[in-house]
Image 1: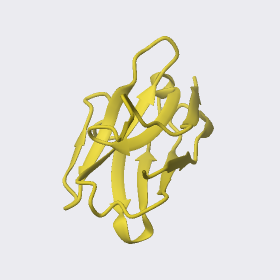
Image 2: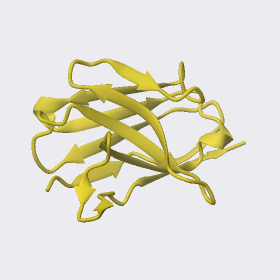
Image 3: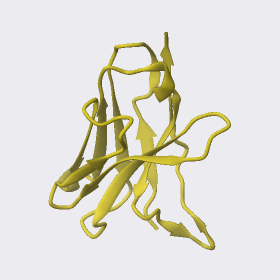
Image 4: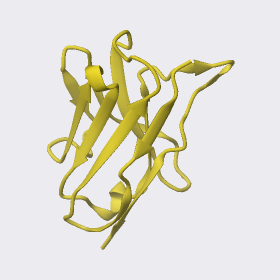
Length: 119
């Protein structure tokens, strides 16, 4: 069972940037698609960006052109560069596979990292 640890969140003003990191406890070579998700207060978790092993990436409409996902399999890391942040980007951000890694009958989720964007 791989474990994922997210970091890099914080408080930033609108228009600012953050780079999130996700460290995996074991190789992610066999995980075809890695992704970043986010969950804002009172809202369901949503997929923000996903990246295949070969590097092809897809983004939610709300972040396309502002966020960039990348992965470094050799380092067991996944990143999310977030530029031109907006208050509506405020959420807890999680990395996971797509679909999410199963954990029993549920899905595995790490502790996430909080991103707060002030207006």
